Length: 112
Image 1 (cartoon, rainbow, N blue to C red):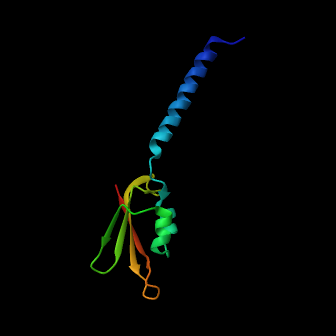
Image 2: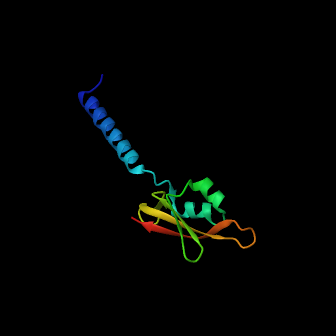
Image 3: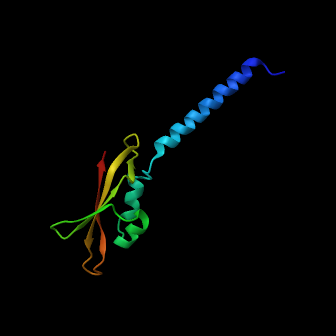
């Protein structure tokens, strides 16, 4: 025998689970890498390796120092700050004097 409140409880729980799933999916966005993971994948790498991992940069800027800055928009989040999304990750590259290849020189994260 099924009690009447069991069906109502089942409906409420089902709606609650669906709402929770929609909330989680809605918050996920395109910010796929924590800062530490993103940085770990680009440190001591050349430009080709960085592009292979992160894709094409959203912007490329040449500095007066001869360094190149690749900007990757909306790719990272700050896991130490409640998973706050970053507006950008800026990877600085400079030419290696031995090989002539563009190599990682530094990274800056721009919070939103």
